[in-house]
Image (cartoon, rainbow, N blue to C red; front, side, top):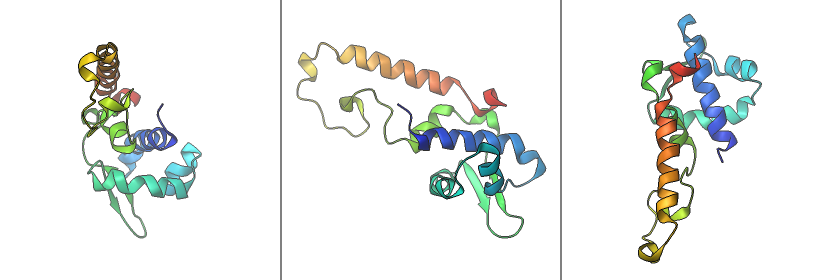
Length: 131
């Protein structure tokens, strides 16, 4: 299940992509348009800026803008950045310890298939698809 953090990050990115033609997009404007808590957005923004998805300018007239064109942002990239995990089972989580039952696991192929389908779908969509 995608958390509030992931859903809000996606809404922020879509809003900025939709409104940056007018210049830098103030986060208070995004919060108002999206009916989101500005305090909560302030917790999400550092991950987006630290990882180069957004560039921010502080102070009067400040705001945020995309660092790439909307078609260059995969939805999977945004969600993997903001979610702790997208894998359907813990043994497929990034950095998970090797499962001692993997060789005998009758369901691992199913879970790997589901994981691949989800990630391929998320990576097939871009911000531009939402504009």
